[in-house]
Amino acid sequence: MAKPTVRSAQLISPFGVGSLCEVDGQSLFVRGTGSWERGFNLEDINVTSLAQRLRPKKLKRPRISIAVTRFPRWHFCPECRQMTFWSYQRDKDERRDDGSLPRPTCGTGDCNHARLVPMRFVAVCDNGHLDEIDWYWWAHREHQQAAQGPCDRKSARLRFEVSGKSGGDFSSMRISCSCKASGSLEGIADGPLPQKCKGKQPGEEMVDCKAKDGAGPAKLYMEPRGSSALHYASVLSALDIAGDSDRPSWATLKSDEVYLGLVKAAEHLARLKQEELLEGAFKAPVTSRAQSLGVDPEDAWECFLEEVMSAEDESSPAPTGDFSQETILGEEFPVLADPAGQQTKWLITRPAKLGATHGLNRLLDRVVRVERLREVRAFRGFQRRNVTENQAVVSPSLGRSQPDWLPSIQVLGEGVFVEFSRQALKDWLTANEPEITEFTRAHLASAERLGLPSRMGFNATPAFIMVHTFSHLMINQLSFDCGYSSTSLRERVYCGPNNNPYAGILIYTADSDAEGSMGGLSEMGAPERIEDVVYRAVARSQWCSGDPVCRELDAQGVDGLNRASCHACSLVAETSCTFSNVLLDRVLVAGDGRENGRGVREPVGFFREVAGV
Image (cartoon, rainbow, N blue to C red; front, side):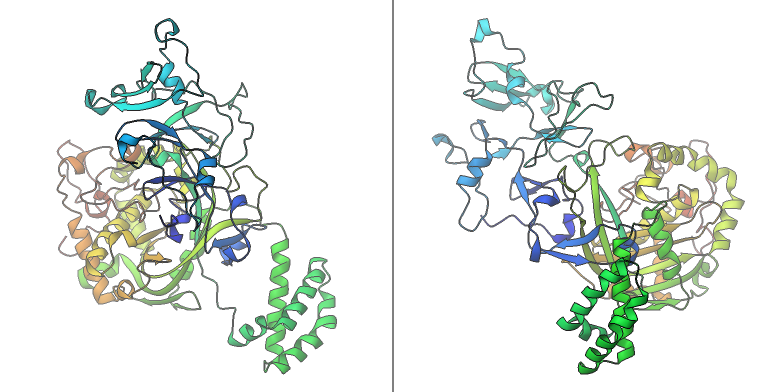
């Protein structure tokens, strides 16, 4: 078998540190960054809005490999149902010559070496630890020694049996032992497991794990191996909105060993706050070296100062104050909405005004073709079971000494940015305030209670629900028109607070190793094309094949945080939505203010005035 591989873009989410990744039928645990191969394997990434805020942490991208270990190690044979604990030593002893992991197979002769299947369930605690379930206990929990006789844990042979009765629920699953003891899995999901947390992460050192009240070890709970609740990644994503710093002459300097030696020597003075000595000590040798390389001396000195000062910045403490995904989006919005456009190394935008077709010029200020963009995603940690402030966030080091870097990736792409008219947004909110408030109050309150705004980086306002829903409608429509699949499109939703109701959406494709940038998406940003796309997206939102049920439900979706939104109309792929497909309601986009079948007055949608809708 070849070495298991995943796409590099997946190493942040869904297969970041601490997650379970299934490759070729094998379940693998992504180990902490302290176990990753370093040196040539790790490549530095820099993007201003992240690098400055995450100091002293650096951003590094794995180029070749990451560290994994097999988990769970308990397997069963699909033929004879015999359970096998595939140990770490067995992986080591049977490793292939090319370094790939062995393929677990059944050792009984009757099964013709059938491939073993990892057990379906694992144990997790609220502090983020992951362990095997004590299957021996489940087989013997009703064990009567007088009836079955004594049994030794080390020599016991277990079987995972499924009767097929009771609709395939836990009562139909049993763990049986060679001593004739047997117990079903009924109740395994009803509460804490009988075993306590040992502070384990697969392949890592054990640490103390205390319950939140400090009274003994934390409790363990069962989770299915493929459950999304096993790994909630905390990721920061930023576009590279800085201007060009590398000129052709600077690239020449940065490839010269003599020049790099001068920079290294000068960094020490900068850290000691002796900048006044830099010019006297280094300007002459820098300009002299520049002349020998054919570089303008003043240009070389400017490059020198920028590199030395940036090294000083990296050694200083990170800026204080609140820093979140919301902060990053707030910095990006004015750059994307700049009517003059951008022309830098990593960001090329071409803004244009919309025409009067469909009346969109009254609702949208401008559309921007984003011909080139770079996005950097940094993995800060993860949570298990619940995503709340009370749940521990596990760092990428998994308890080891914290490295000075975070796993990151950079991706290139293209997109379309649409800016909403602030006046139109304000007028819509004011004219329909009672209906909009009543329609969104419960969902926004639930989102606040769950801590979603701070974790996901958005302002919990009615305008956000409308803009977010419009973003999904555009993703679905653009996938028909631009040649990209809907799963390769992503969204960035920009929405200000109630006292500053700016809004915009960026629909973009950014992938490091798949479809890349073909130009088809940015071309849809031409005014004469995007106007028809918006019209079709809004028009389609008026009716869903799930109506009237979809339209009239008060709550649906994850945690009941959606109203008129389902898979048939407004939901998109998990990889496309930044906000886990919550806070969506297409009535806010194109509602006509009518009274629905439940006697509830709907608000008038923001795009209701679009001609023909």
